[in-house]
Length: 349
Image 1 (spheres, rainbow, N blue to C red):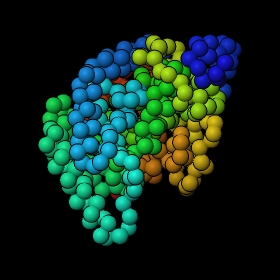
Image 2: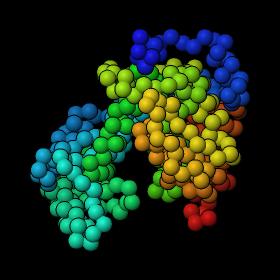
Image 3: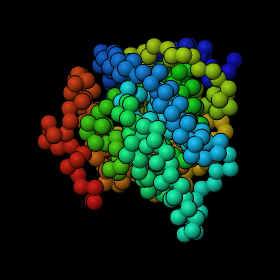
């Protein structure tokens, strides 16, 4: 039987093993009552999505891609594919690619030609109802950001981001067939992190994709998913229309393991254990290295050293709230309601 199949996940680990994991991995406990509330809130947010509208947005973007470049196509990736931590207000992350795509070279003439091509893309987007298009400079990817006039949502377009598309489909299978607790787990940390500032890559904190990867690593550590994931088997797996119902007990274990793993002042370098394995980390001289499931790059590369200390402190706050049995509303208190929060730390430290 395929070790990554949905049937294997239905068999709970022996109770003795689960207690051993909790005793050896972490002393942190997260209440099942709170987890039930998290599951309901995450489910409510996800149910607010309008799949018809999403399909219509992608259809219009595909027309933009085809008009902009020969045989161009648009593909959705990110949380709207993985279903983890998603809601109706989630950004549309879209890859626009075409056969024979080549990254821009170093020559000045080539860059100018590319810039003109992107300006044409923004004009084409505007004609199809995607307003305020602008090119965002980036060392890793070319990004065009705009606003959909129909939904009012932000649309972030990357060029030929086949890596992001492939990652998203891998994590969707993991979520839908192995780990339905992934959605509420990512939802609660993203929600707390958005309010308190530690999930915000533009300000030197974590990205949503990094949080997702961190949870899959934690799930392997506590035995909720196979200790080694066969990526080829996952790619061949068909996902159901919806994932199974999450378990409050397993969500409590996943959150506790996540907090125990990442609430530490020691530098960490962690990865999802896969077959074939991802490439080795390229730079271990960072406080937190979370290896990408495919190429081994650091998903936490946006996290600055000073903000890493803030992240550890913020996770410590959640640990304390969990220990006190506080409600979800206490988790979701913004920093301006307390004496101190992430925004009080200078980004220039």
